[in-house]
Amino acid sequence: MEKRVFLSPPHMGGKELEYIKDVFASNYIAPLGQFVDLFEKKISEFTASKGALAVSSGTSAIHLALKILNIGEGDTVLASTFTFIGSVSPVTFEKGVPIFIDSSLDSWNLDPELLDSSIKSLIKRGSHPKALILTHLYGQPAQVDIIRDICRNYDIFLIEDAAESLGATLNGKHTGTFGDIGIYSFNGNKIITTSGGGAMVSDNLDYILKGKFYSTQAKENNLWYEHQEIGFNYRMSNVVAAIGVGQIEVLKSRIARKREIFDLYTKFLSEIDEIDFMPEIKGAFGNRWLTCITLKKGDPINLIKKLDQHNIESRPLWKPMHLQPVFKGVTSFTNGVSEGLFKKGICLPSGTAMTDDTIKIVANIIKEHLYSESR
Ligand SMILES: *Cc1c(COP(=O)(O)O)cnc(C)c1O
Image (tube, rainbow, N blue to C red):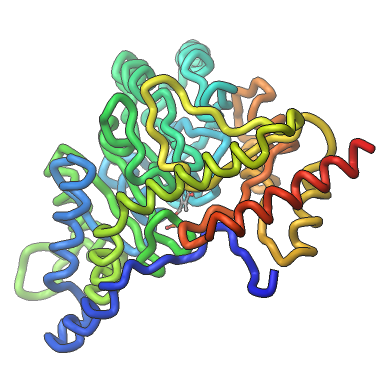
């Protein structure tokens, strides 16, 4: 390809610059302003959650969630092992103890049965988990209805990491809105982007207020700067929110295109039986953020290198947290699923501005590569 094909590059809707100009005209460049309010309103409308808070990143939204739920030193926090580091690093910011739980093959997301048995065995050992951080990977909803019930049963807070799954639903309900707090990310390669940013949503408006407090340095309500607690500088700026307002206007069409891209890959690669596509559980409507496949044989790294020779970006699936050197020695409940997926999986370029022809070219290179390997 003459121009590099990226995994999921930003795709502006057209109104973003106009809104940024409005921001400049009003001189509310920073800190807050009408676009932050509007962006929050649009997020909560879109996801049907009662409240939303716009912040500087998905990672900071998870950090705030932990802070709001009062998770601190020595507290056990369960988490999906098959995820991106930003999902779980905030646990270490607060000196909590992460414990990783593996996936099930039908969703690639957290295995509810393994979750239940892990909680039982932890409680038996005298360590009652305080929260679960559940990731909806690659825009595919986890079995969050069942998982929410398990959390309630054991009195465990549920934080949903829906960084990749904005707009994805399970039985019509948005990922991010099942638990106590949900988070989204708007970093550069997510389904919509603000260049960098995130949001927290909750039906508990007290949590949103607390999030506002902690994300603005925990300043007490006095004229002077009074602090009884330590907070952070995590709020989203008005300029960034203006981009977000432009982007959320096109979110529906982005989801439709992401799903089309998945269908096109499926169609173009249908005669190849060495490939499996990421599944979708019953009742789920994923946003198909990235089209992900696994290879039945061969090393995916060879295919990634082959695509790279054609100036096409692809990536292995996330390396599970329990395999990360930085989490060596961390307690984990594993079943081999995420490890197997990591060894066999590839994320294909899935940018919403990609043409059907480009998808066909990518698919043809994959086909050629797999034919030549099996020869
Ligand atoms: C992107 C991502 C995050 C972090 O979001 P940032 O906005 O980059 O901080 C967290 N979890 C998952 C699963 C992600 O993909």
